[in-house]
Length: 318
Image (cartoon, rainbow, N blue to C red; front, top):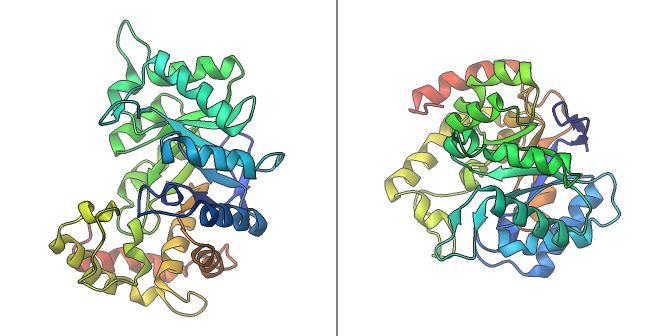
């Protein structure tokens, strides 16, 4: 497993990270805990040393599972997130100091560590980062917790380009942002700032919730327990599936599948520290790792140069 520096944190991790939202059973439907454990264990065996989770995934169950399976592994970095109060119905975002401090303490107990390696604010608003005249921003709270030895590195999981921009301005050590073939604009436009400030960059939604695996037909249906049943209208889904034709030229030579091309596209970015993958089975994990290939020449230079023109032809505005 190839390694990359996590920005200027001093940490070096695998360039493929395992995300655990899907394993929680809340994103794509139920997952047996034994299956979730098998995926994490196999990821460790393969050489994955970066795991992405949240205190809200399974109500903390993913933190508990990672804490147990990664115990004693000094080479493993666990990125966890906080800022969602699930005690309320419906859950709501909270980034006040009192709540964040409580969230950090609960994550420490579940993961079984004295300090959290990387802690991110979970999709805050720009206002939550900035604060106001009387209340400091949420990153200031995390820095105070870092100074107290509760956290080692702090940052932001960003839900928009506006929040990414503010996180960079506020000096986040690590940022996480959706980045894939269909949605690359936010990170691309901030590449200059990232090169100057040098945060670690975690790319999530690498396969755009499965679209970029290239395995769906236009009439794909999702059960109610799958968040994708609410994510797209029928027209939007059909349109996305049709747009995949613009990417088929990437599948040639040692690029064996469209999903392999999608992961390689993300890793082709020199500012990305790791691509966060979300397999729900051991087979899916092994296929993704195998199809990512040997690198570091992830995609042909001429294919990368051609890609955006092909996307523009089918109406993809990144």
